[in-house]
Image 1 (cartoon, helix red, strand yellow):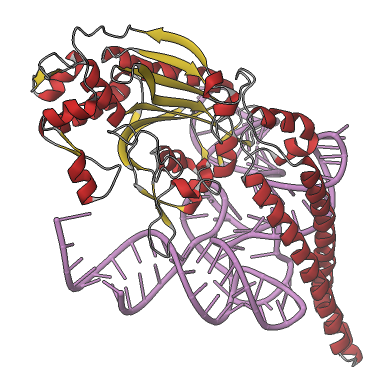
Image 2: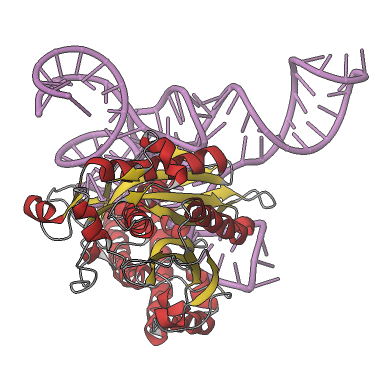
Length: 426
RNA sequence: GGUGAGGUGGCCGAGCGGCUGAAGGCGCUCCCCUGCUAAGGGAGUAUACGUUAAUCGCGUAUCGAGGGUUCGAAUCCCUCCCUCACCGCCA
């Protein structure tokens, strides 16, 4: 959520920033609602103040009336009249406030100044490349053919068991998938200073509002049929970032890494990536989340992005780092780097990690704060997160980049210890 | 799922219709005293929102959440959530 004060005081510049993201802020509507809110709030608070002070004096008034032998009823009636006024004024305030809150909850974060203006992914900036795509002396297969030939990927049975966009992994491929997870977690916990978490994969509505998936993106989520408003997590970002919801965090920074399954309904992506494991309803991801002091946030995003890049380098997978343009940056994010890995079958780079800086946007929704050292007051902390990495897509990249002429697949050196020394699949 | 006990400030804990944003204690901050340390004395110490250029100030809200009773609710009533204990069930 944006700071309501900032909206009030710098409405035009906020609107201009949001326009870069492709969001049109209805400034006239905001000004009108805000004006109504102010008037309604003052009226409601004044009515309440009168009611309070009258109620406070009531004990004495009643004692005096009784002593004088007067009727007490008129005193009570005045109280009731004040109550009626207060209730009406509060209802007016509540309805304006609800409208304003609904508007606020749907306004995206403003992009950071360093984010290039642009409308779509066409305008993203390539910052750097690592490695060079391998030249194949045979025609490279895609991961579907490779995986099926190895008996390690079974899409037909995934469809039978659940439906489209589900798959079964088997044998050494399933093990390779697990090895990737262990490798990533070990790197982050042993070398990068992250604390491992294991979290609920079902979350409540408040958690999704906190990170920004709700109220706007309900269609992308799987909701459980239960009166408790449970949702399957679309990313570990949700439970992990909500760790400090409604808390004042004693120490910053705090860095967490968490492996989890992710569930996405992918509504609106019907024709895209229908083949293979690129876009599934269920996939696994190792996610890094940092809670940082605002002054450290920019550096922390660079650091976290490097942590994701280093994994690809150790796996010897060619990749490039993209700075997303304003229009391609997500709802809650102020700035995002995407890492894209080379996929030989597609002859292109595909997203394998997304690392974002949210400023205080999520923290404000969450009520996640730290105590500012100079003022001594609670202030919103900043959140950073990124995939390190998307495991399913990493598996795809390993299969395709490490394939050999005979259909076997070499195991990346760093994964071999996690594979019991196995150096080749098939 | 059943029964019982609870949810009050950074923490512990009192209050059980008006004088309570909330006693008392701990912790923390500042001051005094003390050769140092320990002990002692005094003062202060919630958050959000609004108003304001900002602060002081002022106003409103907040005693798990929501609703109700009442002129007035931390206190009475209802619903829900959560915690703890025991029983049942269970990986």
